[in-house]
Image (tube, rainbow, N blue to C red; front, side, top):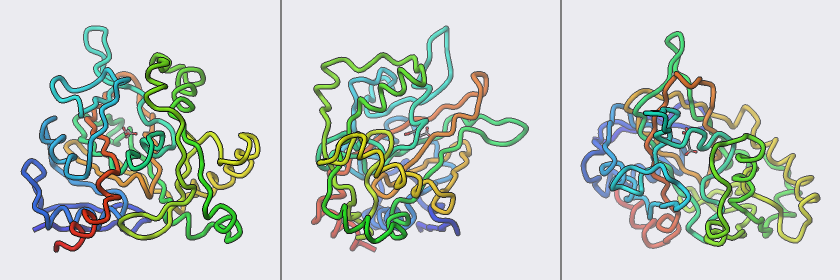
Length: 302
Ligand code: SIN
């Protein structure tokens, strides 16, 4: 039977009693969905899924994004992306710098095609002196909303902000000197800048979240980029306070599922080229979690 043990921290729970290689019952899916709304980050220990099993499990949460800009995908399973610093025969086997910045996935997509969950399987975890490296760090934007000054909540209650994939991509290429190529005009045309509410109601918890992030947001609509930065920077600092943060250290065979709508995350790049990290990932969109009928039915099943 599924068992969900929340951490005593601001995010996180460990989920046991379920085998993710097999089709999930509706009851287990409902329990996992409820836990995502409450705990944000769910760790399923000892679950080595192959690429197809990872895809099939992830697809229970919604449509999986396939990015034409990513060349590191699992052969025959384009929904699964490879994140790794391993180089074989002189060629990288995966994207070495994915997610190494504070962000929420896919907020550059329009409407409900923004990110709902990421699902990662840990195939290799770097260690040094017996300690795991390459953690993934999170911050809780539901908790951070509660403590936001009331005047800010009122002022931006109905505001929207512009999100652009190219902002973070250019930063990676120009500032971080990432080996990835700049986005082509076609790739930029596929994902033009889009607007989303500054504050969102979480479709599972029903609580408000702060839905702006430093990687993709270029401005609050109706304000200049300069004025937006003046407003947003203190909000970002507020979200990054230690009291909202949670550090996930990986163990080989972990599956981690996290809710993008109520968190930001950052992949901690504290390991060297010979300290190998290999993760396989699906990025699931929020089409299904914003479908009121689906979510009502899913959450109702015990
Ligand atoms: C991501 O942003 O999806 C990558 C997270 C990680 O590799 O820890």
